[in-house]
Image: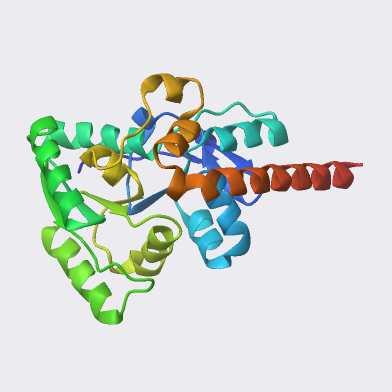
Length: 253
């Protein structure tokens, strides 16, 4: 992939321990190895209890606000106006760029069936993109041998972009721990985008997304799997926002 010089410092806003990207995807250019993560209300709550995950999010070169909850939190805490940038939007943007230059990408994560469907759609949508795929074993923690196999598969393919879809916090922590061994210019943790793009999980329509209710659409589509993420961690997220808002008020006063 072509590389360009860019200073993204001015395209970020500080929110508590995080530096959230506030620019446009069209302005993302890269001059060295770059890690892009996303953060939403669920991952924010998980990171409050998981220091390793929190460090992985903080260490990302670019952290995208992927959720209306994070947009609202930043606005309430800092008065800054930012917009949601989803992993799906990042994925589509990068594929379009790769298609124009005949670039390559590698998908690490999900199951073999999902990767096969993803490959079929990719060939139709972006015929000039060369893609590699690997489905890692489904387990809580990877062994040293597992990591060696994954890293070899990625590095032998030599992609321009690596997409990692193993859900949070596993994908972000894996990237942070293996970044130095990954010989790829751009590494992106995009989670559920694998399933959305493959069609194995239906993403809510544009109306839901435009109204800021994508979370509700996802909950209605997959209530059994996602109820805790939204119905439990939703209130936890609001509690944390109020707590940090009050802490900031007392510090200033």
